[in-house]
Length: 176
Image (cartoon, rainbow, N blue to C red; front, side):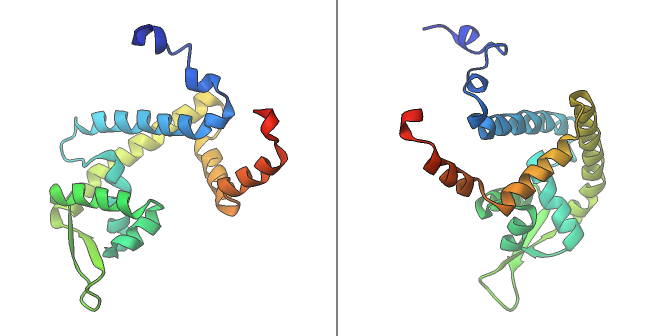
């Protein structure tokens, strides 16, 4: 069997060769490329928390206190992912949590003074990222942000699993 050089050449993309069924894989891969680059970039600015936590910081900055479940719903991420990001931000001293005064089952989140002081740097990072996406869109000759938003809306209207279930009924097992 060959080494990674033989198997990992960019011009010979195995997953891409499998066709459009692997769009979710490619989207995850693209997301990882962008987040990993953003993570490297944030290391140049020590005031910045990890890129994946920026939406959490914006949510708390804009909405004030939020319960973890409210945060997860607002940023449309799973509860475990939201909690993972909250823990990272807590460790950095940017977010604090406490029990809701009227419902001890609810954990409330808020920016700390240090977290609020970090927001100008996060706003700057957002501006940089927006410009990168604009330029990528220009290179593609299409509005990448708009297209992804439309795809998300279409899938929110009718789920991917519903579409797969419908098509699976019409595609015979002999087609494999």
